[in-house]
Image (cartoon, rainbow, N blue to C red; front, side, top):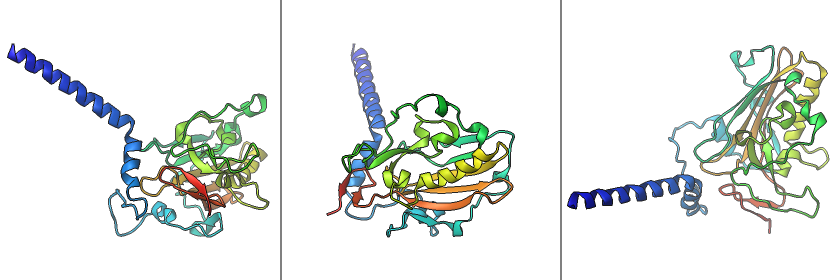
Length: 262
């Protein structure tokens, strides 16, 4: 009888432990954010392995916005290796897995006119339903497009037709994604340059890479690193970093909350 009671108690304990572990797993982002939020008024400790020399992504995450939304990286020269610049008979795209916080990572592609979806011509684009990390529906004005955040594509929808895919969507400001101010540059500026070149011929290919740049465990990227190089020529060639900012707004990159400048 005692052994039976002990076994029954052990099973109950295991069930409770399993339940708590499942609860912690599905709420891991919230738990981590609450822990880190204690130190939001002071520098956040990098939980990754510390090294004396910062890699390129870490250097970009440390850049401070000073009014210029787009800055050149490596003198605007792409850094694809010879192996990465290999062509193929058809285009391709490769998305990285989400990290442990559910954040999308680097996206790579070999873009070509044949890869660009014809579906855009025949039907309306489906509504985005993916909730990207740190996303909040925050209005900045009264117009329909006056939202602080867009759910921004790493590989633009026009290039491959990929839409509701969490690995390809991040929380980006309107200013980063598609700035409407005259002569302003944003992601759409460089996407349009690539698209215009691809549409000229099915023989045109562009090696393309977009990387969201995060700082430590922040859910919203500080910016995006965009790099492109046309195959066999320099018709398309850029290497830039675009700040994920919105003029007149202060963004808490840790959780995506934001407020107007005082």
